[in-house]
Image 1 (tube, rainbow, N blue to C red):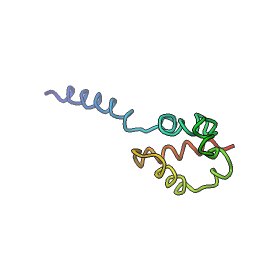
Image 2 (cartoon, rainbow, N blue to C red):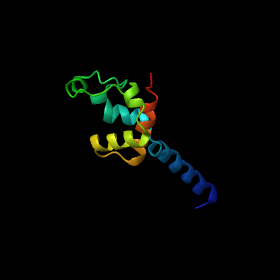
Image 3 (cartoon, helix red, strand yellow):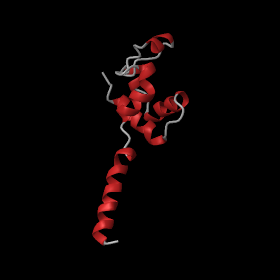
Length: 97
């Protein structure tokens, strides 16, 4: 195979892999957390109200450390990678009032 062909093939594979490797906290939150917490994190869903889940934008939640949030997420959501949890914590920080 010519070098230019190998380079183009490698660039194509990398371009396909990057979106999968870069986890977006909003996407993770939307697919794994929003069912209970709601899209804005206000826990205004039927499940959120039934379980008396706290608003993620509240000072009480926002004052938690990243380690505390990570522990909470790990305990309530199975199947997330460490990177997905870190991205979700970052997203939760954007909800601050």
